[in-house]
Image (cartoon, rainbow, N blue to C red; front, side, top):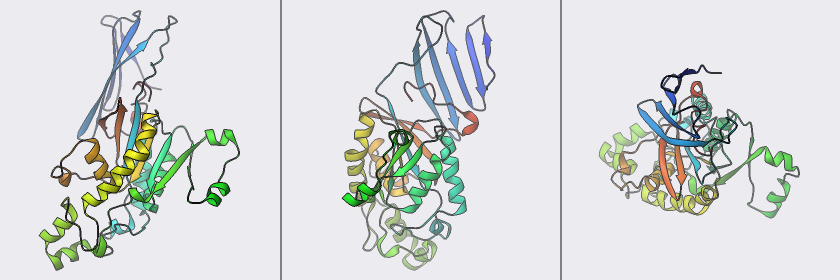
Length: 309
């Protein structure tokens, strides 16, 4: 429940909570009202386009259906090797207590955004993040990892209740979304590695686009598999109007964001992703529109007035 203030003189409905402002402009008896939403989160703000709500003649309004769908990208929470400042790469390491808290906070940020299907890497830290985040969602649907690696796996994990299926969200795991494979650096302390090989060499391994660490992957190589999978497996769900969440890793998500935001190989080098911070995109008419990170739970229903989200 939030307070509303209606000023009949200039017909403005002003509802305020923290950094969110929802304003309706126009006559209360007109056939259409336009809702504009301004939402601020940290140092970044996002503006959602005005939405026309057609009147049905009975005084209530419902959004028109459209082809919009949402894409949420989340880097996993802090892992136990993040905490120890070790190169992790494709070593399968769980979250720390701080990482668990980050995943829960991420879930609170997206708790009002519909989610129909979830993609994660094959690694436990991204799967933990997705599961913990979904525990905060207002729809209370259960995320269930799908098993299609064999006929037996599919048969043994089959759900026989249609009602239960309706209250579930499929979670699809894919190695293509795994973190960049750091080769011979995996398990090494980052500071000790810099002392041994020099800061410039380690920085080139970590942040250049096409230079891989010894027997590892470059960001370019990681992008080849991650972006190809995103195009082939994730985009068709968005095109079909599904709302999608992808929980993955710094470099696989940097690769996908490079594709979505059309960044150059030089621009992506400076792109940093914090653990446990969700990023929202709107997919409309084949284009991705970046909306930034949703605000916290104290600003509930921030995205309730987008066209069909």
